[in-house]
Length: 180
Length: 171
Image (cartoon, each protein chain N blue to C red):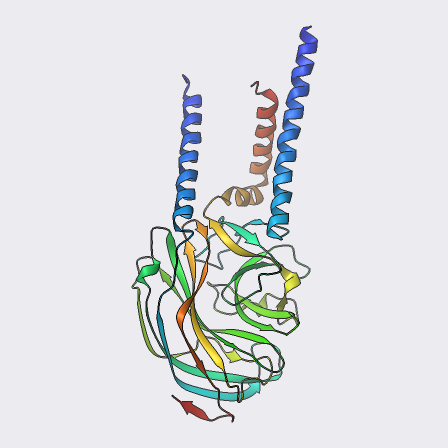
């Protein structure tokens, strides 16, 4: 231990081990947390159209327009090992051609330090709600759920679904608006 | 006698080196089996998932058949004919009763979905394109890999020093 090089070497090795231990500690202390938060979703308006899917396969498909309100308090999510939350509102439904369909309607990134109270009114969906076919018309049950992807400083990347979700039927006719 | 001792020492060093390499290989292959993914650990190469992942972050993947692909998950996939894996989030899925699934992805930091990245005429990804789902993450560690790719001289220097160190070190 008497040359600069060997001292630097030991110092480097020691700091690496300490950092690895801290990282592992971060991961282990937050890996088994129960992350569920009550969520309030309310849909105010639904409209249905039938157009060529211009976002991809150019077939005539059902296009849904949903206007919704959202409120949740996600402060409980943030601990020392959370870098950001990726929040997304997804619609899940079944059609004749597909047993399961899931479409993300809206998403938001909440970084550590930003406001944690979500109180959104009259939000329009961020992404086009195209079905793979014509399965939205007269669909009795479309469920909207708010979910989170927790991005840690180091560790597991869990996907958590919020405990409030809303199910609603879609209109029977095109170009008609249903208000709730 | 000096000559024999030296040869034995060298023999021992080489065997030692071989042991280290094969242990590393076994651990890697073992990980591949446990996670079901052909590449259980990947380095993030682009900034399209910022601020969640930056270039140089390490991702741990699984690709188990019992885990269905659902929206919101972070998938690592390869586009047919291209080598570079892409790390993006699932935006849309349509799954048939028999389990056949087609899905669309988008990077968090991109304004549009990935259809511009897919092959000409390809609108959806399928299970066969998926390398794995991101389940765990460690920041920064993969920077070494990126440095070695961007500056090949650095890679050769590191390998040379490692080889030299293992062969010369007498412990």
